[in-house]
Length: 265
Image 1 (cartoon, rainbow, N blue to C red):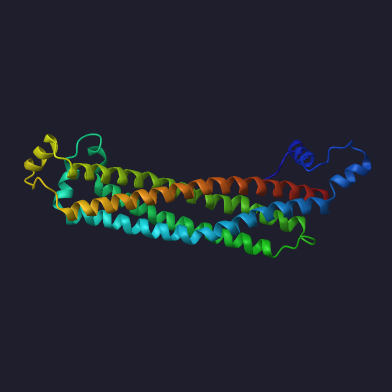
Image 2 (cartoon, rainbow, N blue to C red; image 1 turned 60 degrees about the horizontal axis):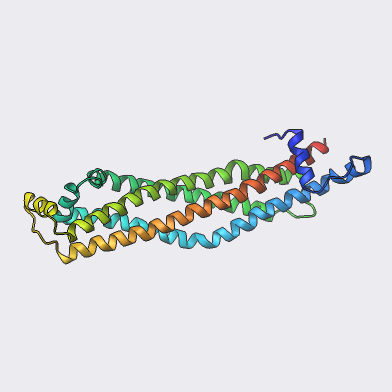
C-alpha cells in the first residue's frame, strides 16, 4: 500500500527529524541507510514477539486437545444418560432455549474446533515463514526492497492469519460458554428437589433421584468447560495484544522501506 507524504513526514518527525529543514539536515534525516535501519528494527520487534508467542503455542495446542475431548464427552453424556437428556429437554427458561438444540450446539462447536485447527496451522505457517525470512536479513546490508517485501508479507498474510485465528477462537469461546451454562443448569436440576423438577421427572417417567454417576459426569464436564473457557479467553486477549504490536511495527516498517525505495528512484 502507498502512504501519503504527510503520513511519511509525521513518521520522520517521530524518529527525531525535527530540526529546521536545511539541505544538510534533510540529507541526514532521509538517508536511505538510516530508513532501512528503522524498518529493520520494527521488523525485529515483530520477530521477537512471534518467538515469544511460539513458546506458548504448545500449551495452547494442549488446551485445544482437552477442549476437543471435553466436547466429545459432552456429546456422550447426552447419548448415554436418558435422565440427563430428558432433564435437558424439560429445563425451564432461560436454559431451555439453549439446551433444546444440544445436538446442533455440539455440531457447531466441533465444526468451530476444526476451523480453528486450520486457522492455527495457517497462523503457525505464516509466523514461521516471517521468522525464516527475517533471519535471512542482515541489519547492515538489508535493502529497502527486502525489508519492504517482508513488511508487505506481514501486512497481507501474517496479520490476516492472526485475525482469522482470533475470530475462530471467539466463536468457540461463545459456544463453550453456552455449553458450560447448559451443564450448570443441568447440574442444578439434578441436585434440586423443587416441585417443578419433581413433576417434570415424574412426567417423563424418571426416578426422582439422579444417580451419583450422572451427577459426577455433569460436574466434571462443567468444570472442564469452565477451564477451557478461561484458557480460550486468555488466548483471545493475547492475540489482540500481539496483533496491536504486529500491526504497529509492520506499518512503520512499510513506511520506512517504501520511502527508502522512493529515494532510490
